[in-house]
Length: 93
Image (tube, rainbow, N blue to C red; front, side):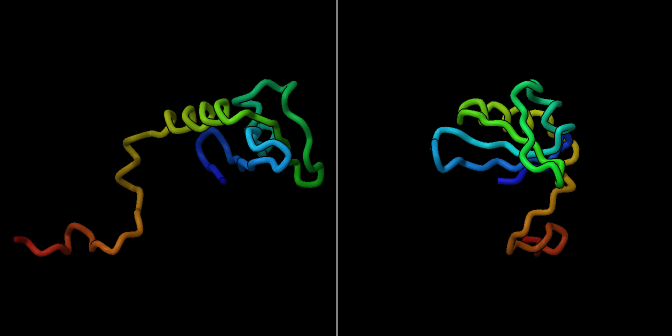
């Protein structure tokens, strides 16, 4: 799962070895905003990619924290792909 937010850009992957463990990938700058530096490790030096392991509950808390930081005033600008025509094209009834 990829997450792009004001906090940063992250990719969350379920590990094969342990189904209850998730790997969160991102830049050092993005990960350090949320997690303690001693938990973060280098994944790919060339791409400056870092990661850390989280249990499912800790990952859920992390995603919840990102959701709480959404500026709800910006929701009007969200464009959802639906089959319903925009409100100004609907027939008045």
